[in-house]
Image 1 (cartoon, rainbow, N blue to C red):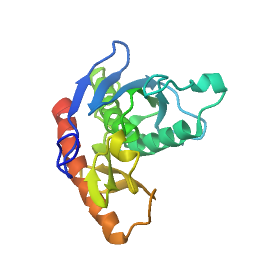
Image 2 (spheres, one colour):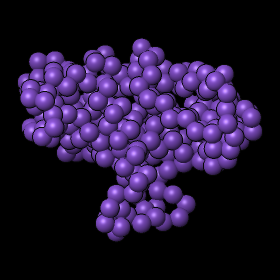
Image 3 (cartoon, rainbow, N blue to C red):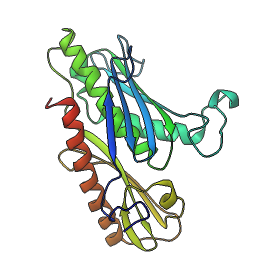
Amino acid sequence: MRKDGRKFNELRAVTITPDFTKFAEGSVLIRCGDTVVLCNASVEDRVPPHVRPGCGWVTAEYSMLPRANRERSRRDIDKLKLSSRSAEIQRLIGRSLRAAVDLKALGERTITIDCDVLQGDGGTRTASVTGGFIALALACKKLVEDGDLGSSPIRHFVAGVSAGIVDDEPRLDLPYEEDSRAQVDLNCVMNELGEIIEIQGTGEGRAFTVREQQELLELCAKGNRELIAKQREIIGRL
């Protein structure tokens, strides 16, 4: 048993509140243990110049609020540039969510997912992917309901979760207390078919073997299946 009472292969408690804000086309507040992220999806009838004619675009922005952590951090705007960590995470979220969408079926419009971390306790990027997908799907559902699309462009459900090796034991869904001393840290984004969209794995305290990587991926696959089941409860079958 871990300090929070979970078994090594158990997720933290997950609570998802849809339609959390009034104006966004899709909105979700997701809680994974003590990590809390607000995800808002906004639809615009234009696309960036690099997008092919007739296709849409999905992108993301990520920010951690100043008191999301144990000590206050400076806002990116105070530094006049996006932090390298925020830039790397929002690219991950954008790639993950684009993998869920048929961009041609979306049409020439952009959906931006804003992921704002209200409280961080490990796994903020994967919580942003999981919650961001729900916000994205709700925005697409609204486009269908409003008659702007004939059917949802969502191709696959997508979720993300972390796993790691702590005290030489593989564990699923690390809180900060475990993440801060993990020997190996791995983030994995998958779709409902069990296919991998992205893996980020690092030997923080030591190198790890292919077999250990496989054990971590199996933990992530279990966690992502459970998260996608929770997504379906909110969204229904698209």
